[in-house]
Every structure is written in C-alpha cells, then in structure tokens.
Length: 108
Image (cartoon, rainbow, N blue to C red; front, side):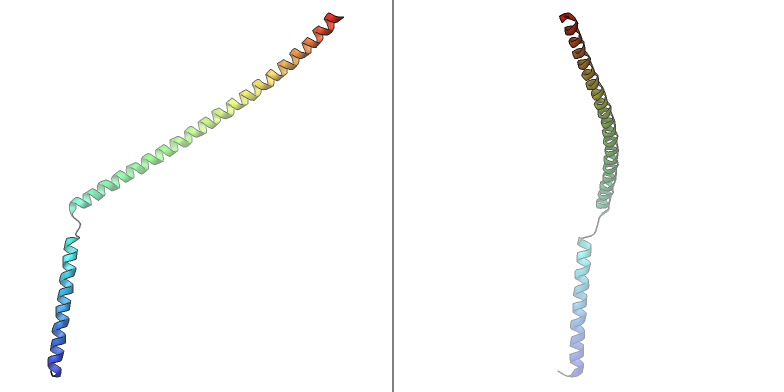
C-alpha cells in the first residue's frame, strides 16, 4: 500500500465515520423531538402551577390575617380575664372585711 492509497483509505474511513455520526445525531434528534401537543401540555401545567401559587399566596395571607385577629381576640380576652380576676379578688377582700366587721359588731 503506497502513500496515496493510505491517505485515500483514511479519508474514506473518516468520511464514513462522519456520515455515521451525523446519521446517529439526526436519528436521536428525530426521536426526541418535542411535539406541539407536549408544548401545549407544558403550557397548561405552567398555568396550573401559576394558579396554584396564587391560591397558596392568598391562603397564606388569609391565614396570617386570621392569626392576627385571633391573637388580638386572645389578648382582649386575657385582659378581660385579668380584670375579672382582679374584681373578684377585690370583692372577696371586701366580703371578708364585711364579715369581720359584722362579727365584731354582733359580738359587742
């Protein structure tokens, strides 16, 4: 095999390898092509995801508002309970003082 035959053989082998690689790439691209139906499905999924995120944000906002309202009510109820307990304590002290006074006046 002389030099020209060797170069021609290598060139043919390289061309066949290139053609085979190009053909394989074309087949893979053709098999994995995204169809219009898949794109429409992805668009629907994106819209559904966006809607779900908006609903989640609205629910989070509502829950935060509701929690603030309930904490306000709890604070008010706690203040009312404290005032009622203080009034009850004062009434008991006054009642005890009146009992003591009545006992002293009835004994004398």
